[in-house]
Length: 74
Ligand SMILES: [Zn+2]
Image 1 (cartoon, rainbow, N blue to C red):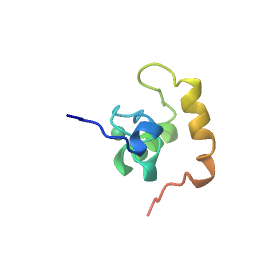
Image 2 (image 1 turned 30 degrees about the horizontal axis):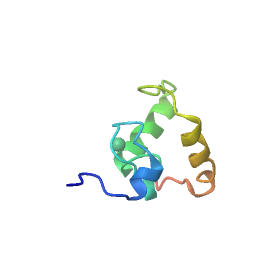
Image 3 (image 1 turned 135 degrees about the vertical axis):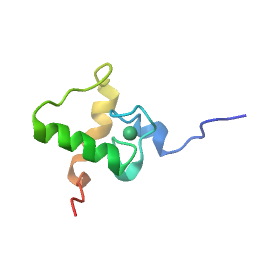
Image 4 (image 1 turned 90 degrees about the horizontal axis):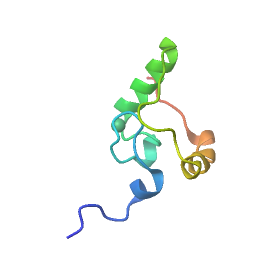
């Protein structure tokens, strides 16, 4: 019995907003909703990362995501 199969979520880590499994399209978040919530916090200037800081592995994993990390604000 496997409750978590080897998917992209395992590589992407967890959503910083709700700790759910990250989704490739919204990395590092799990959904558009969490991505928007994070962006809203940044815009309000009161952004704070819940939980422990990201591990070096997570930082490295995110590094090559920057180029494709765009929000659809429409
Ligand atoms: Zn989330």
